[in-house]
Length: 403
Image: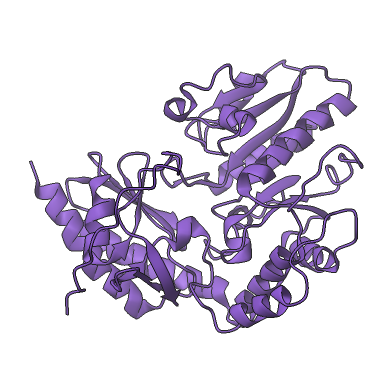
């Protein structure tokens, strides 16, 4: 049965800054992997709020836990101890093999803290102008510092002068990394996404990750990894770099850690755990009791329901079906990704598919102009993947057939 036609949402309020090219729908509520707009039209959620809604919508164990926390205390500042911080930090340390955690509210804040850690690491060693290696097509946020680390000139335009101190290199080329840093005593860290999200679902190879880990150890650099989008079980491991069997010195988390409640975290190993001291960094909202409860319950439910194994299995199924249906199509460059973080790169820009998919009752994303990005909740079932494909594949094939 076709979804009922929905009346388009009116143009955005003149009082809201015009910072987003919005799809003309407004969501009202959700259940599992499905959401409804204010007109009652249902949509299958293939985006999960950009890898945020780990447990889908209205989860029967998460929501009562958050309601319980709301009735107790939502926020207390970091003048005081927050027991939930200790509990969630202990769990993240256990899962990561690292040692200490700083909590903030967003991925941008986590990445900003990573950059500050790396710089102070250098200053503590007597390096006056510390430099950090970053990557082509990277995305780390839109603050001035994280924007400077980002490898996208289009979104940097108009915000110069950018912050100095970055050396940019291509992905998966260890010789290029060595050449770019050869003889430079100011390098203090290498910073990257294990799988680039906004850059087009571009993954670092396992052998490359191991080589960078070895190089950082040899040269006394910090290995800093942005797992904001690729972490929290999305690839079938808690953190995507774990597929390579490495442990970073610093790791940024956010998005899926709170299943929709804003939360960010910086996890540090022994080499970086004591760089920040009181007064060096801080946050008003970070580590608040509500966000900590969201993180604790998200991890508990993920373990109880074996969602890492589920994400890997469902990702393999979705990837296999996409490759079988589209892999040999002349308009498709590549189907790639890992677990439930998948990109379908087309030969031409395909931003129009976001609206077309929404009209058909499916929420997706297009990134890097020509990459369809799929990031469904980790609870998605095989039947729902079949439904997703039933909606998406005809749209893609029809689009590619257009002149």
